[in-house]
Length: 287
Image (tube, rainbow, N blue to C red; front, top):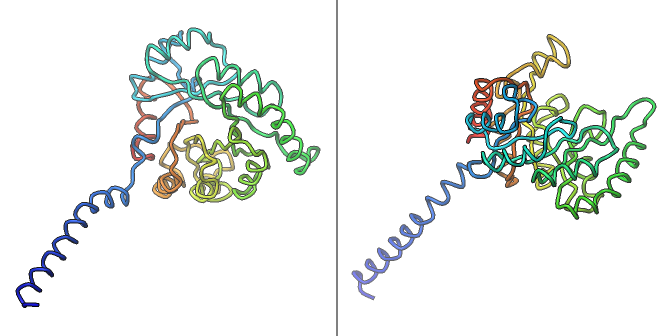
């Protein structure tokens, strides 16, 4: 083979490789940087909207603040038909219903969710106390939920267990096992990003729970305030000003391919407050 032929082939080989790398580079760069835009939608609790006397007035404020959805407490005194009309008119989604700590009347909360077009009901499996032992809470709550799961599946509404300060499910490994033992895609996790700072690191919980996490609550917690002012004072910070490592939280959500609702669970207020919360949520989620 002549030298000039060898040089020509070497040039074409290198040029081809460079062209291939150029085609791959933009895709690789975007993946490396990562973004939750288009994957995460922000919301607030319906009871956080202080102005307005009707669902239409309240959801209009939410839309004007730049927030996409609301979460309804099952005990909220609101006309559900009017809420549905307001949701359709404004485009503000009622994405979830909070059932809370009670182990009773969960099907009624599922019905509310179905009525307003929500896809999940937040549940809490009781509270471990001196008179309600840990192992009893574990078996009894699972037995209760197993009876309800078929109805949740029929209504196409997730039952989402949340990590709260109830002396129960104190590690992500145990919470993952608890969920997996239910053996249903309709029983998953609602992860509160602020609650677990008392026990560990939110990003570790997100990574370990992985695909089980269907929704997240956004709030922060200050370990400094905990140490200096007391346990509950830790929550007295704005979203983004506590001890959460939000960059690590975002990475964990990206790594687990989270796609869903992130709802602020903090003090509400007027339109200015809602705009403030929208900014805080967008900042910590990188939206």
